Amino acid sequence: MQYILAIDQGTTGSRAYVFDKRGRIISSAYREFRQIYPQAGWVEHNPDEIWRSVEFVTKRALSRKNIRPTDVAAIGITNQRETTILWDRKTGRPVHNAIVWQCRRTAGMCDNLKARGYGELFQKKTGLVIDAYFSGTKIKWLLDNIKGLRRSAERGRVCFGTVDSWLIWKLTGGKAHVTDYTNASRTMIFNIKDKKWDNELLKILKIPQAILPGVKASSSIFGVTAKNRCGLASGIPIAGDAGDQQAALFGQGCFEVGEMKNTYGTGCFLLLNTGKKFTLSRKGLLTTLACDKSGSPSYALEGAVFITGAAVQWLRDELKLIRTAAETEKWASKVPDTAGVYFVPAFVGLGAPYWDPDARGTITGITRGTGRPHIIRATLEAIAYQVKDVVRVMQEETKERLDSLRVDGGACRNSFLMQFQADILNIKIIRPYITETTAKGAAMLAGLAVGFWKTTAELKKTLSIEKIFLPRMKSGRRQVLYSGWLKAVDKARSV
Image (cartoon, rainbow, N blue to C red; front, side, top):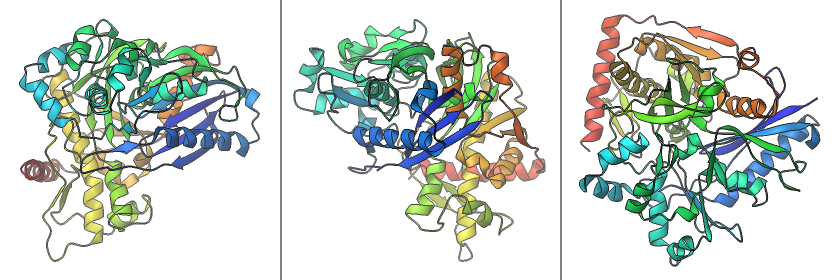
């Protein structure tokens, strides 16, 4: 038997999945790693800890089913996007902790760029708004704040990469310094029209071209494994690479224009396939590169919500209201509604469509009768409301009535949340049997590149629906609830 190994390197942990020819998960493993908070609004990861977690889950996933390393036909990688790593080209050692996509340390730098009138230039070239979310200003911060780093970078001694690049470098024993178009499109220095690093933007941010990786289509041979890497045989092709949200879009089978998915993870990310059409948003959405049916670059509109699943993690780890995320469904069902409580989890500001870095987490409507189930229910409902914010704008921008949403990610297993999502959006929610579509997309891209799957039709045969949630909330109730949410958002933005 031959298999595809998918490495899904996320914000709070790393997963490895083994897929067979029918697209089924044969084995998997997971490991969390530390979240580092040097000061308020700053978030870091240790790149070596990320790598060790990937080593662990890869070995564990293979050993659990006695899969031989030589049975792996190819490797696909998907990753937390925008998170920025710089490392020494000769030694392979990181020069600093990774600066995570959630980190707001460069918000002031972004404000300065916008004040200097660069907002439109960056958006026209990259499809992105100027924001601390993206990699560009994170790179500049590292070059500006680590003694001697800029000089080393200018001499070609430093590599920049998003997490996929770091993992490919490690897997190949330092032989390949590459990324794919989807990850490159999230850096704020990549021209998504010309599909290359943009010299004008690099000059504005004072980033040397020498540190940048090569860029390939998401279904390509990025390199081959070196000996003694993650318990794998040497010479296995790393043949798929895509940022987590674009991988999920592909893994959901959204190959055609107008198809849409939402991933419920640490944040929520809704992507709409727009094909070859480059569409700039005027209402807070992003234009980004995704994958067409062959894994080559195409365009998508995206709404990025920073904190959704992370809010549930906060209930678990900080407030101790739950022991596991799965408990939220039971608690939320104990009460008929939140009794007027709204929770806006703007821990690191608000993403689409607001793009307000100064907003802060807010709970409104608390009374003496507010209890644990109300807070937990309000947390789940906040996820659905934030998705509605994005869908509403997406419908306005495209002038199209969107009648369904494909969902994936850990929180989509929560049937209370999915039903409320269908109710508040007034569209059907389609949940697949395999909700780990981020990993599946990476596997599909890798499999296509090596002929494991030969056609899009073969890939579509591996997709199946587990449940469809239909809206059942009355229109008046929907409007009242959403109106209350918008008022709560206004309060969070005025903190």
